Image 1: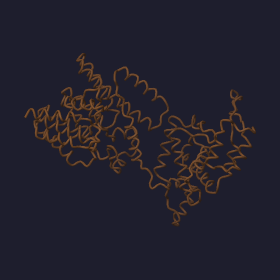
Image 2: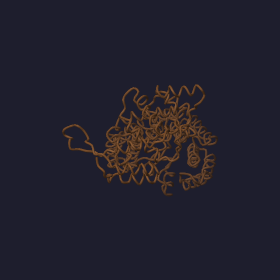
Image 3: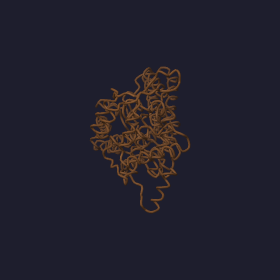
Length: 497
């Protein structure tokens, strides 16, 4: 036993004084008593290794808990034994539950530790556990830089544990009923109308909204605009290194999305270089096509539209149509997510039991992002140039608008006037009647611009002029910078007169 308080734990004293827990009396007693130095293990090769133990301090902290706090600590221990460890013993132990209690008591001053608020206090502690498992971090109460999950909660163990805890989280506080010990008491008071389950939260975040939040985080990462093949190789090596490390489920899916986006951009880069040099065209195009198909296979729903663009640019109209029909089928599913728009009930039903990776591939729809560095289709070159000249990095197009545009242009390329006109009408109707679900306000200018381009291509100059003027009248807070292209197109039609 050492009567000296370790230097590494000196910041803990100040933390206790600032939070006023434990009391000065208990704090002084803990510091004056010091700590213990104990051997790490019994193995001969480790007989000279020791660690600092704060068991005496922890005992005093437990004794300083009030009645509600002590009950909550008991609930956590029973919940661990009878619910979390019900089928298979987990990597968690009661020491982690004690650590959670210490941190929550000290740091969450908004909690009222009274018996009538016991379940809300328990739920707060449970959410801390969920957060720690997600991050793979359990900071020691006395020396926070000591991550007690460092060896135990890693890799597939961490992923499985998080999924188990998150499933319990989705059930809410009633998950306590799974415990036969706790459930026996809770059922008695429920039957007598003495208890309803609630927390301080107005409602718990749904599993659907959690997926949406994840998708929004992924989209905020953007994608990797590959400038050359060497840079693409460096990205691939980095992805491979990350893939070999211990990632959470959410991190893995984010990596999948980013890797798909990088492959898509690499394909577009190769196609742009092919157009520029026209050397070894067939070989380069096949390589670009192979990479794009791989991006479509692992990426989100709207990735297939880039494949349709690839075929359209090469005048492979039949192949482009096949991709567009697949894209239309996927985008029209009742459970897809675009922005924050989703039918939660349909999503929940359709995706029950589906892995997060597959949910992303089947449900997530993203805006079509045209980087200024790449060539896509000739019809949008003026818009890309205007966007670039005005300092914007990329041109964003709503996926449904891009789908209709490609249908119009592909049918026109095949000489199918009837279907081309029908697709044109579908696009016009979308812009007239959409309530922002499929065409966000900040992308309405490029959407009207695209309608005008399609009308002009099909010979409707009057309709095209009206659409271009509509484009100029849209929100000044648009993500697009295409006004110069719009004015140029209007001038071209007027000169054709």
